[in-house]
Amino acid sequence: MAPLHLGYTIMGEQAPPKQLVRDAVRSEEVGYDFLVSSDHYFPWLDAMGHSPYAWSVLGAVAHATERIPFMTYVTCPLFRYHPAVVAQKAATLALLSDGRFTLGLGAGENLNEHIVGGGWPPVDVRHEMFIEALEIISGLFEGDYLTFHGDHYEVESAKLWDVPVGGVPIGIAVSGRQSCELAGARADMMIATEPKE
Image 1 (cartoon, rainbow, N blue to C red):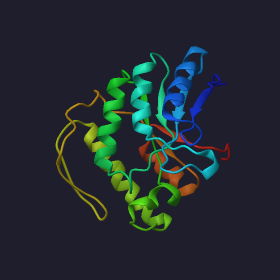
Image 2 (tube, rainbow, N blue to C red):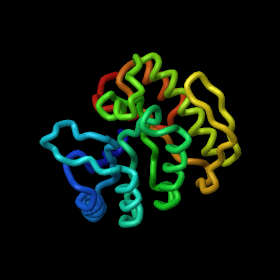
Image 3 (cartoon, rainbow, N blue to C red):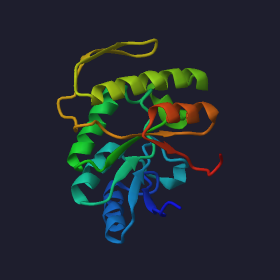
Image 4 (cartoon, rainbow, N blue to C red):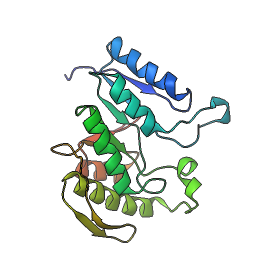
């Protein structure tokens, strides 16, 4: 039987940025095995009252902690963020944290992604976009120049100048058969919230 690992979630919807960093530091101090961070533009409910920029918070977490591995839970590389920019942010966090960062990715939700005004396509289109985004991100993690012409994204001569050797581990959030197959084929780990087969 695999050993049990307990993690802590810093919920950007429920606390301001400095509190989230303090919570991360404390979670390391008391012995949690890993840390995850939501990456939302809006809180789930207005009453929650917070939603700082997760990537700035995680940069501070990388600096303020020493041992605990951490991950986005999860980032959507389809609308608010272009996949090339996600790759750059993830590579930078991995370097700042000495390899403790894992890039958790998902196909998104309208609540957080509608803000850029691009509409909300059906799941099959989002999965097509997601596959292209994964190709871009993984390609940039190799450290070479990348040009990509897809149905949804274009990248011209992009390169990550600061990227860890071997890239950054990628986790993919799953919720059904299609996303499970995608994670099985393209991810280092699967992210699920329910223990269903």
